[in-house]
Length: 130
Picture 1 (cartoon, rainbow, N blue to C red):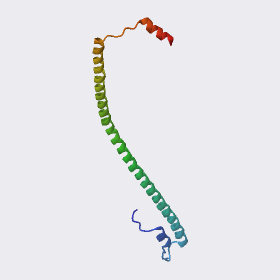
Picture 2 (cartoon, helix red, strand yellow):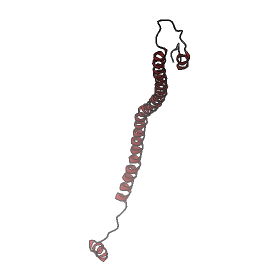
Picture 3 (cartoon, rainbow, N blue to C red):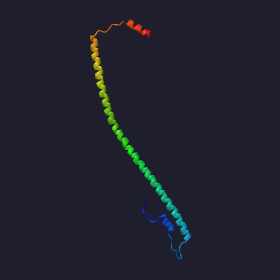
Picture 4 (tube, rainbow, N blue to C red):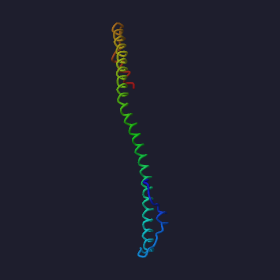
């Protein structure tokens, strides 16, 4: 807070000397009472505004921190997603080689081995039972 010359108490306790042609002491006291009330109201307002300012600064700091964390997470997410996609494609390629490689081998074996002969009528009769 700024360096103040007079506090509300100083204003209240101030005594003035009277001279022959001075101001009316009652009128001066009433005026000073009004100044004291305004002075105290300004002090309360300053304290309220300082508390609000501190609260808002803390909120800004918190939001800035959370925003930096979320932006950091967003920048890290695409990198991990690209790695994940690459890994998935690599696994899929290996799986296809494994499956289709065995299928080709089984096709070669089945071409060499004779296939059992089933009649279509026999197959049709078994199907109709269900």
